[in-house]
Image 1 (tube, rainbow over the protein chains, first blue to last red):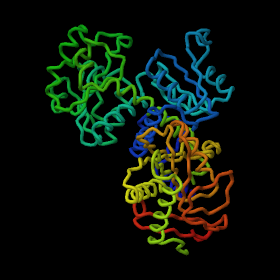
Image 2: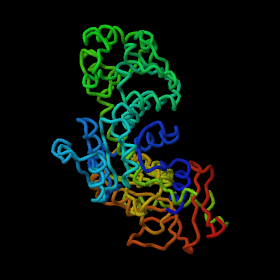
Image 3: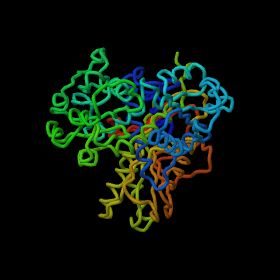
Image 4: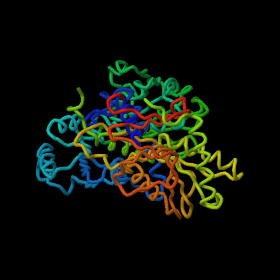
Length: 326
Length: 180
């Protein structure tokens, strides 16, 4: 028994997540990403038991603070928290004091006065989580901030790919859609390039950030080039709510030029995986036959989201460990 | 560091425990082995192999990770979280007699966690505890049913079980507090 705990101590010296918050993938090392994915494998097994609950976060309080609508992410976090025995509460912004004009910092400080251990934040402004992490003692988990990052989505995407392909390094991964507004894209680019994947990004020229090559990806507006021999095709949602300008003529034209159809999919490798972070616009970025077809892992992504979020919650509950760091 | 069990001794001890299991349970019907990670798992597999040689019957074997049930999780304000690994039990534990296997029995806290974890998988008919070494100093009312070796120790000493499957060699050594 003492041997086991000593051995665990040695391993974690190399691999623990020594941070207070999860704000983005950009600041994580490849080893930290692998640790989250490995831990998520163990967490996934918990979801297959007759009693889908472990006592690991007993007595911890987690607040889910969502300033933007969300079905998948909020439900996924809440299930993950409950499976770890944390006490959870959800703040729906429509019924909160935010509608009376309270600022994000004031809301957070008032919540913090009630001593939660973690705050899961989704916010429409990029950087909202970084801001809150400076104001709050609690661990902050980014559940999507504006056009910046959505780290747990990228982690669950990587988990889903690794589960099928057993690796990420060397895979050709094509990400197609609204590259400009997508936080899922930014988190995925950081993660996939850190783990050695060959990432192609594709969309209308108006929706490709000009400096995107800087992140080590290959941009193109020719969808067939992106799809050819791809191991993974990831579709991004056309974010109608963030389209103030006219980025392309019509949704119908977008589908004709960039939409993922069965015939276009034939250019990819025969064992291609089709992914989408949801919510899908069927008939815009993805045809229904593809979304519901045999290559689609879209619902596996949702299932894996719970395991990955359990891993993040568990690993962050250890804290930043500033005292012992020396 | 004195070697308290060598490879031969470990082998003979596990064979003896396998015979005790058959005698006490009058065969291997309804039995299943569950090893506690890390070193309980190879010990459980070896016992399963010996049971097959003795009785000709296959005893289902699984592995249990107790990290999420540890009573020292979250006891410190900050600190790295212990690594969680997969639990792998591919059979129903309901109405089976579960032989829980660990390498060293010490405070009893790992066993307590393992009992809680097991019960989340179902309702076994009984749980029996097998340990290769019982080094004493219990902090909970827990007792092993099958003991490879009773080893009186001082609290500052540590017992290292090394197994071929994990460490490349079979031996049990007693390390003194400051030397380790």
